[in-house]
Length: 243
Image 1 (cartoon, helix red, strand yellow):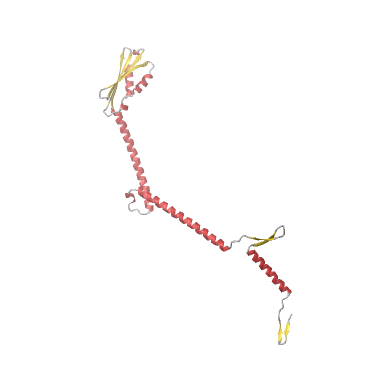
Image 2: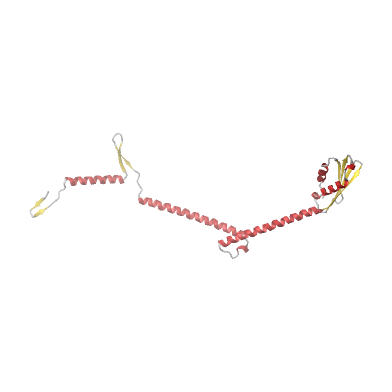
């Protein structure tokens, strides 16, 4: 519609029904959007009563970025702490290693790599010394065993006939520094005589001399037929047993 004035033509637009309906639609859309962003949702129950339910607030993209930054900083902090702890432990191990090395091995060696190299050299040096000491120990053991064997100066044996059979006389003489274990073990003699069925041991007497370094052992053996025994062979075999 147009409205005419006396001084000229004036045009004034009068809102039509279409324009009013379009504005109403826009208002409804804006209201729905506001309700959505505020998290308000309307629902009806069985009685038809309208209830409003508020949705949980949604995190914005900026909040997510803030959480990511916080997690990243936390991981970096943990990594720094672990790295610091590792370096402290390694420094303690290096210090302990240096304290075990002789001064001549680390003198003038300031870098860690040089000190580790010298530590390897020191380990090889000690292994060589240990092997040398083992060889020396074995030699000393051999000399000591030979000395114990030589401490028994003389063992003599003699077999003679008597009225009941045979009599075996064994003289054992030891050095002054000999101990009880260096004296003649008669068990070897008994073990040999028991292997001979024709020989039966009936008595044994042992006597120590005044210096306690000499012993006389008298073993009496019963034989059914003394002439059947080779006295020389028996005496030689017993000498091999006790020496």
